[in-house]
Amino acid sequence: MDVVICIALKECLFFNKNIHFIQKNLNPLNVYVVTNKRNFRYITKSYENVTLIDEDELLPNLCLKRIKCAIDCRSFKFKNYGWYFQQFLKIGFALSKYANEEYLVWDADTVPLNPIEFKKNGKYLFFPKWEHNAPYFSCIDKLFDAPKKADYSFISEHMFFNVKIVQEMVRVIHERNASFEWYEVILRAVDPNVSNGFSEFETYGTYCLNYYPNILEPHLLRTYRHCGKIYGIMASRQEIGSLSEDFDTGSFEIRDYPMSLFRCVKQRLFVWLCKIILKYRIMNIR
Image (cartoon, rainbow, N blue to C red; front, side):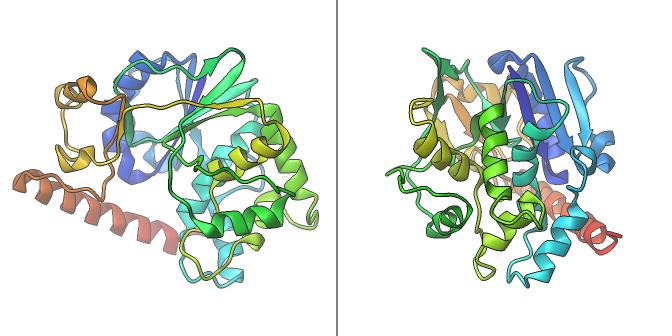
């Protein structure tokens, strides 16, 4: 199984601890880390099966500059350039030279605390959530015919993608307006006044529900999204591992600050530094 992880600057520090658990509990054949090439220096080189990919080089014509241009041209109220870019990279991996038959997209800030099964009886296991964001479905309805909608959400901290299905979905989306790149078609379907108007997991899950209804099967895990409130992103490997008795996965979101005052201050300084660097990078996109 190949694992694909898109990493922002703010996630590099935590990933260097998380990779131990990814190797141990996901047992990947390859781990593809897709990130800005300037982040390569911050990522551990300790594992031979980890490949670093420059996010601007994963696919021709897909780069942060073009995403920024497409968003600015439509006057999006919320300039979530990197957020949309990451989602397109996760889908776009299926179109790249690295893709095999399937791949698991895993969130960089989520730790697999115990071994997790992703296939059973020829079906892909997914882990439903219960949120509902109406703009996601408004966007989906503009991308392909999707009369069926799930009464749960496909948005999770990970998703197992079938490469042929993703490629087919991209073709269908692109055919809506072949004058633009497929990701530009998606951005043109997004309401420019909403903060989050597209979800790669919700879109893929809804496509499968309508056209490959028997390929996905729901499965429950013990998950906790706010591990950061316990230890913060400065958690040690031992502290992270101690959560395995209670949870199968734990997310350490950078916006969750730990109870320890010292760690909280360190994390706030780290977040501030990352924002300054990213703002500089965005301003200097040519």
